Length: 387
Image (cartoon, rainbow, N blue to C red):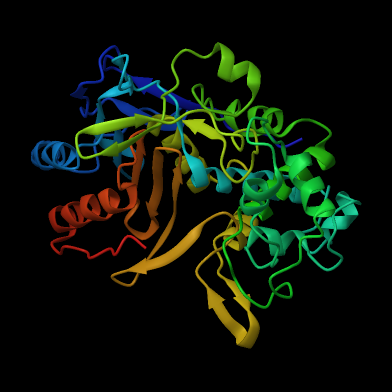
């Protein structure tokens, strides 16, 4: 059984209000026996950045949360707006947001944890663990890297599924079987982003572990890291949790509330709800090597290779790029009004996290925040395209 060092969250600020910024030197994430460090940047710099970032939050009209951390230390935290625009239910830092495709790195992490425990190999054919899987030549690694060629399940649901009935991962698989859905290309030859692949990975985690996907995440990641306001979609949590944001589409100054979707119960490609503080715990756990070995984590951050030895800027549940010659590991997400970004400028030890429930441009916010931060900390404004 994997053993964990306990992560501690030391708080000295109030969390009762979200329509203001809380960015003092008051939040530390590390081993429980470690004393909180001094801030990694001067208080004068923190105050200057606070003023700038506060203005940026207003300019982007961000309804949601923004966290900027340097060496694991949050130098800026902002929480602004409403969990429900129509009812005026306030946000707070414990409000959980759907993080959409940022969820994929938790799916990948689950697979890698099972691999490290000897339950599977990444080169296993998927059929070994899901016998009814309708494709003979697709490996787990193909699914992780979006190189399997299996089609987008959302199109099949739109065409063949009842619009008044929710669909599950198992039913997605059955739909692919029943409709004889053809691969778009031979596995390993190309890279096309595939929500289907990650839905199948969540199903695979269930088959191999013997428990539901949301239970696996809770027991193996969220609880050990004390991510107390993070969960994967499950009916009991959705029905009982009163501090979950509602998704809205924003059009100018008008908002449209997003109704529950028949795809909401498909997990793995999306489905995780979290907070900026909890996501920082996860980010720091990656630096500390708490969940899996450093060597396996290195594999997760390695670009896929397809035909003609072409590298693809995607690893296992993470997008990969360079900004000003420095490596960036990140993922953005978009689903039914929710947007999110978890972006790790690893060589600078900078982490920027955005959650929103009004389709804010999370990736663009991160890019502009990093540009300002890099100018102040390193004397040069880094240009991050956000892609």
